Image (cartoon, rainbow, N blue to C red; front, side, top):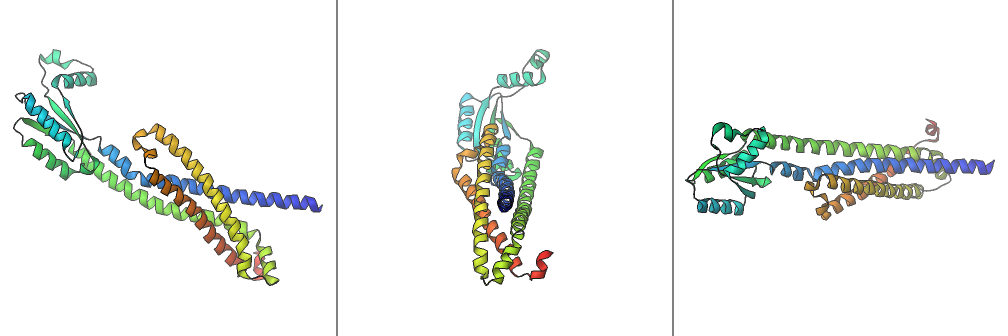
Length: 292
């Protein structure tokens, strides 16, 4: 009978530890995913910004030397990521593929212009800066027109600001929820041992002596939960990087190392604080209150 009870208590203890570790791991994993999203918000925003193309249309009388010089100067400019020359013939082929019809046969001539497509660096993609760049390029005598999607740029910048703000707000809220969930799991674990705490206290054990094994046990559980969360996050990052290589998640090891370190520290810190508060509560309870 005694051995059966001991096995039951052991299974109950393992089950309690398992639930604590699992809850810590899940919460820290989700927190890590959100942290990854926060750290890569600018990178994702930059990726979309750098898809914006400024088209520099050239006059028919523009000389090849002038075109080459303009392309080289644009390619070397601080604001340029890439500058590609597109001949009117290439533009006609692209347009034909897009509409599914050869418009040159219908018109009898090619109305398109030679152009240079400029992709800007993300830091320069704003309505004001692009307007200044366009005005500078437009000063060239052989430039017909500088064209870009003004409404799209304004919309993109506004949305990036809104999304960044909401991600930060969501991160703060989720971090608070994470603390509450981990705190709740640890508190339930300590609650199941409230009678042991009170018994030790009644025989003269100090609060520090009683608290120490609870702190150490739950800190170890926090470490284990953090390690599981880090493994799950590493697998997630690997597969996300495979699907979205343009985010280059694995090319920034310092940021990833800081993220994993933050997850580990959070696991330990939240476990310590939650255990300290939970044990302190039961240490201060009267014996009669333990039953409620």
